Image (tube, rainbow, N blue to C red; front, top):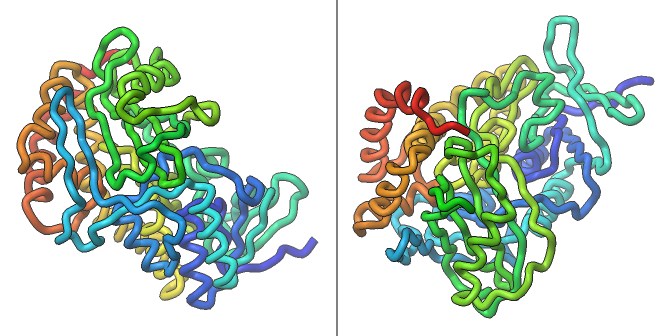
Length: 410
């Protein structure tokens, strides 16, 4: 059977894969997107869009009609609450959104199709290699059909078989996250602030490095969830369903929550990767480990990384993977490295207990926390927050070996 031909083969139709497809197809590339799920498939997620994500969607000309506008973040640490607006002076804009992933992903896929990309649903593929270990296309795991491509985009989310094949797996010594969410009716569904409770306790009363969230969807429901980092003591014994139920009991009266509308669903958050590119391929979004360890957010990084890779391919197909790795490294790696080091720090309960209170203790520190939680900092951001994070990273770099050696037993 003669292989079909495309310029770019994208494995995965989530935000990162769709962004790459939209951008490349609009620039004249022949793009085929392979999605193992069915049309309208849901992706378990917190559904929150930072101002950075909203900005990326604007760059893709994707309208946010139907999304619920969010103007800021309400942070809670113990008895301290701070309600902050997204900073108007940041380059991404002053509003975010909540948009359930089923709707967001559908809009992105439709935009990719309108740009000229081909979408193949219910089609799982694996990369194919040349004799010299260069990725030269993909092959269906079902019927063996093959497609030749100049670039294969790994947009598979949390690492799976394709990632393992190419070495794009999570670094074993680095932290990762777990999260769980569901939906519930609430009369406060039109609230204009995301809410994050930074002080969570597990079933045995221990502090959990993570947070609980209430994300109003504007459709009569809220997305309620909790997440935790793997650096906490007893992580392997953590019962996410119990943690979610305990958090729900804290917020149920204030939010007038109804019963869960669906069974809570959990997912893994990879926050590192051994490799994110190689000859003929590159990983984007979650598959590239581009998730903020300090909030578990990755939609904005997925959209941006997909666009970066597509633009580079259209300029120089052969050099795109290497150039992409360099640019993504310059833009994101420093901030994400600081976040991973920070997760080891707060894996120590007494540091977590005092540090999170500090995070919202003063207006100045809370403003910095807001920028961190909003993914508003990267390699070329100016202002106080990046300077503070740079100093923190220097200190964490020195403390990192000790923090890892003394990390709480999982």
